[in-house]
Image (cartoon, rainbow, N blue to C red; front, side):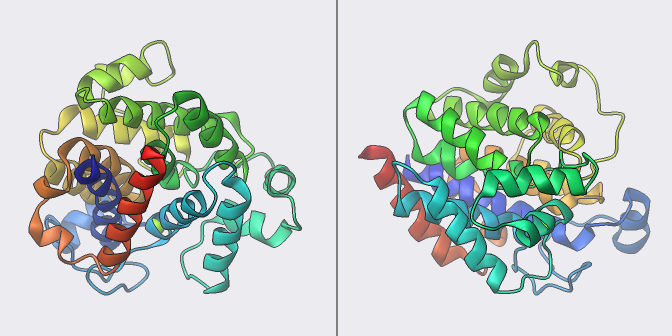
Length: 289
Ligand SMILES: [Mg+2]
């Protein structure tokens, strides 16, 4: 179980660190500039060091810490961790989350609704999906896992499409932790949803920050690629919101594979690896309590 939980967290971080190199580029620009990106090398839009991660991993860590501090009612603690992260003045805060932070005055759900109004309803971003995996890792009780997944998304994203994607994602993770295969778990959870076409078709959208587009590409790579390496490298070379697509897809693929199966050349580069190992152990304690 610990190997799988670690695999999930490192899967997010590796996808993030790898995909950050090509974030905001088109697939064609990636091809012209790099040929094909197959290794973690940093640089990119935020000029990162190799193995440095971005908001996707930072907010995943914040969610994990909030759960560990207060497993019964983690939302307030998760909020505290969001604020602590924001105080470090990160350079890569997404538009929706930045707007929520600028409005927040003690009530996350209210801030999310107001941010959505301010953004004229354009608040179905992938920012809650990219950080939601620790909830599935920590809660073996399905009802509790789903309840926290929903409310955690609404802290920043007042749009049901964001909530829906988080729920589908964490239900897939829940099945993986019970030993199901990734393809079976995806099939069970996307049947009769807006994502069902991904079982047979490739997405016709760009892998951008709109949560429906992100989730479509995540499912596409998870259904089409054999290995963890294939998943995160494919997402990286498509550009656009590549770090987030690779992080989200990498989380589930890493959870299925387990930490020991992830390529050493990737995991050894992750600068926050020590912290992720500690969090994995503590999330497993929450799960077993
Ligand atoms: Mg990012």
